[in-house]
Length: 151
Image 1 (tube, rainbow, N blue to C red):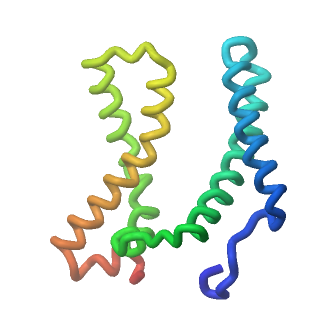
Image 2 (image 1 turned 180 degrees about the vertical axis):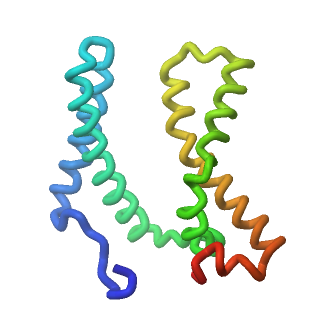
Image 3 (image 1 turned 120 degrees about the horizontal axis):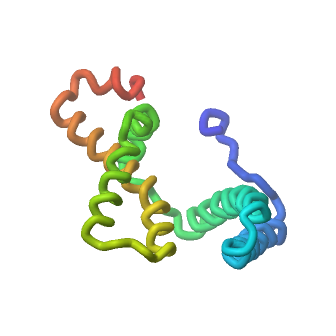
């Protein structure tokens, strides 16, 4: 899409986009209500919610970017392939270890807090990947083109 200069758009209609956002929020509320009662029914609600929230987030991010013209820092652009390549190389263990240590000191009986930690773990992995890129780029500048696919 970047090469052909095409815009990323899932749904062209503004009201359909708002409908997807409304349905995503409604499915989250239904899922929260359904949680303690029915695990089987919750499975289908979660799958539907995942699809609706993904579409809604893409549209909301696009709308916010168009309105406020947000620019990303250069390190984000430069490290994108490196993050893609390294994120699955055991980095998911670090957020798990952090959460386990956190739970040793503060017993987590609250499911909302556990859910928050679960949702924050991708950001921890991404942050650590960017830090690895930054450090490796400072220490091993000549080999970084190999590690980033010459990007």
